[in-house]
Length: 257
Image 1 (cartoon, rainbow, N blue to C red):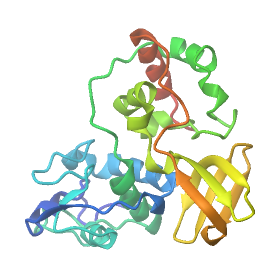
Image 2 (tube, rainbow, N blue to C red; image 1 turned 180 degrees about the horizontal axis):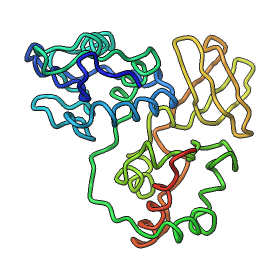
Image 3 (cartoon, one colour; image 1 turned 90 degrees about the horizontal axis):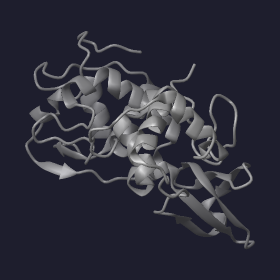
């Protein structure tokens, strides 16, 4: 991890020293991969959350989760403030590597958890039984190299998601789903229909993991249709409050390594 040039372990505080006009960001979620968002989550937690809070709203007039800044509109604006610092030292300059910088931008733009709530944490052993048993979570998710790839890998989900967002994913998947994880349906000019999970997208191409777990890349010019679903591929879990608490507890134990 690169450290702040000033040695401080906080981030983005001096956004409040920028001109006072607050405006929402223009979100382009397709620009950010799930890997970049997860890297940004780790960097934000270690370097930024002390001042901005886990939901990005502790600084008056700024809400990073909602994209409300003072005088910042573009990704380049954010890079400049992070790299140069501002506010006469209130926010230090950060010497992040290229990957860390892109991760932070991705996380601010697309990765913040929904509003945090009080979450009950249950018994992880019972939660593991639910995950691999009645809940059938392992039927879609991969953990520590085992399981399918049709849904996001959960091997380190406990390190990159808060209890609140884990609970929300179980109870209201539509509200909690990251933009990059929305199911997609593609139709090629040859009338091939492909459904699956979007892994990455840029201006000209899109990469998906299809329903047969094949990695596919398509040029957008070769598509007659490209639809991104607002609905998740899974329904809310059919569990009681205690079971949800147990499952959240197990997910929090999945921290990689």
